[in-house]
Length: 407
Image (cartoon, rainbow, N blue to C red; front, side, top):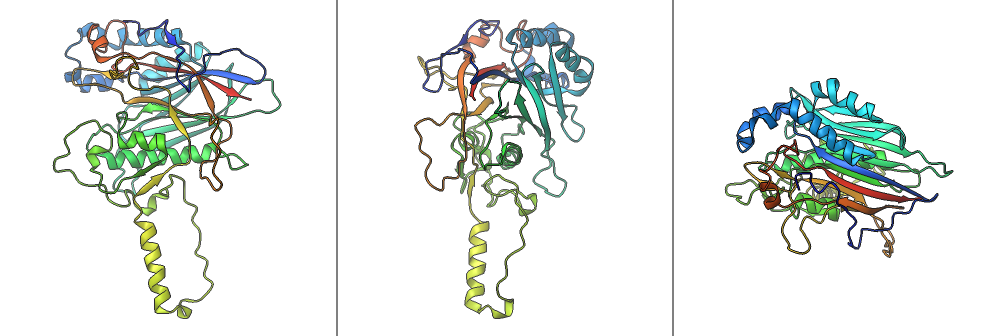
């Protein structure tokens, strides 16, 4: 248990988990780990969250070798790390991972925040096609005054195959503040717009996507449901209810419609808007007053839609509850809470689902989930004094999944 079920990467009998793992020429198997490693600066700034811990286990000199040992043990082909502190990244994290055969890309948070997100992948498995950092801070949009970031890579599997597929891997750490669901949803929309741009293929479909990170939202919350279902009607939704981190919504504002202003350049479908000049077939003087009224009404209705959408078909690697007991899995645990906020989402294969004509979801060939590392319950974690502890050196657990791409 202290070792987080290290030797129990469960091959589960879920409908979307395939236990067969044979390698062959027409399959590419790869593993992905998502891990919030807890920046030392943030640990020290929030020391009240770690009063349950023995002091020595909180020092970076103790924590980093432990974190590296975990990474080595799980040996994932792709690492998505959050809360990667810049000075530690340059001096220790990157050199250590490079010595293990990883290529590392990093995006630090904007402003004066000293940590960020990293995506590292094995040279032996992938070639890097593009690196696309996303900054959620926007000086021209007052709503977006927080320093969170995302990172999106396009990777090409190294396989001796004529048809060379690509995979889009995204990593982010959304805003924590439970009362600012408006910012969280906008940050998510910005990440999805970048993924859409990077993953879009010439034939109009999207390549398979793996989206990892600390989304600071719980399973079943509106933000989580939006990721999985591809749509969200947020009319009348309190901004503090978006992430589901706290139950009370007293005195909370309702989300405005639209949530973000048009100058962000992202549509309600979470794609970058192409600035198009309006097609004018008549001059204004040719329009009757009735036609002008109609035009105005149409524009207003369109602008005020409270429906968000995205065009990916995403599943969660984890089911968030233990099937036998219904007890919640947790991904983070400290003295204030033990909940799930970390996820690996992926483009699931859509077998036996005939796409409807005119369907918005354009996906050819998804990923098959082969296995995942078991998570733990809150009770399990408190038997080893919560997190961090002697063996697990972050206040989050690593998530790990093995996928198959059919070629």
